Image 1 (tube, rainbow over the protein chains, first blue to last red):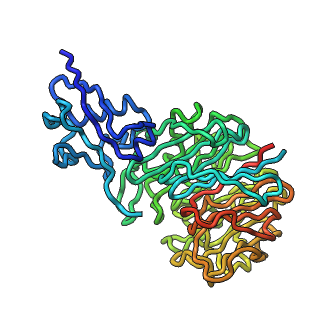
Image 2: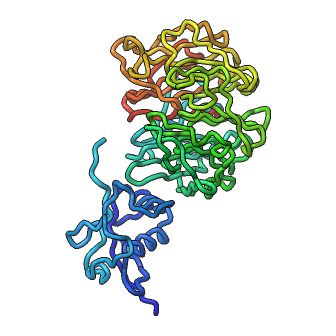
Image 3: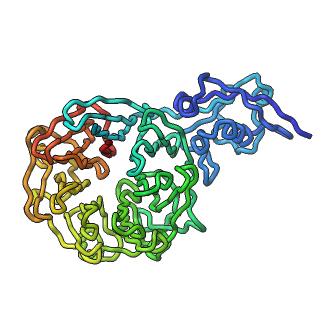
Length: 106
Length: 371
């Protein structure tokens, strides 16, 4: 059974500029048959904004880029397995999934 | 009417400078891609308004942009660089095997005759080609796979294919340079490659005359005499007159033969430019004096060019892709510095002026003559 859910995603400014996204937050239709996962959210993000392919996760390995972090519900989810369910509040659209560029100098 | 356009890639964006044939009054457009590292931007020789740009970021990876209107507007194109077959390993800094991993595009080289064809030299070192304007990329695996790949080792900046010279006389011939693997040539359009390092001597190698392992910084060719190439190596400036079959050192009376860029005068096959840097450990000009050295004899005898360049307290570096020439009459010579200056000479290097002085560190300079 298909189960599409609306997930809110907050992107860092450089990626919004790259993909010509005028708002700080986008709402994605995520196929969440079973559970809404990090992998499903990123797939939906890349499908809607092809310019972001490879910018959040490495294309060859699928791994999160080292200087990118994932936050939601006041939790750092960066090291969670990509196929684990995201918090229910994210899956319900009540809280955003935040993609963050790590702070670094230069 | 002739227009000269200079494409400048920096650590914080790209800048486009334009001037008329006099090359005295410059306008600047930028920063484009503000905040992003632009490793290289270069236009097609047959369609100058078709420009490719490599944007790289430690945060967000590799992005490739393309412009079809001379840099006024851009769109992202393909950024999938997948090694052909099983990537295998090269040597890591400690000599241990390390898997080949794509990091970034160092150099984009548009085809001499087809605007939709462009080559990408990447880190970890490999050569990719697109024939659809950058939308998709395929590796030319003969270079990485010709046999010595497992012995290649990165230089301090990473194991990068940073130089690709497309032969103007022979469409099947290309020259590539890799830090720190050396120099290679193909005579069959990239299917197979061979090292061209006879005559190179590198004291940091266990065998200083080994076939691979040399840290070649840059190679330049004059289109009218394609078998003659000039090389700036980690140390030593060299030339070949037989398309790389053998090299001869031409450092001559240079104050130091360490440096990164090398360029050939567009109208004089024996006129060559380098920017000597103090040493491999001290990356600024000797005595804080920024001097381009010009040889009119194909090397060996060099003259310092100083007029308009800072001759005291200058501690910048000039990176390998940050020097180019235009083919106006008289020829123009340009280079950018890690201190954010863009210097230009409209008379072959006799006189220089700073076109810009406060850019981010300059990574690449490419010049186009339009009209």
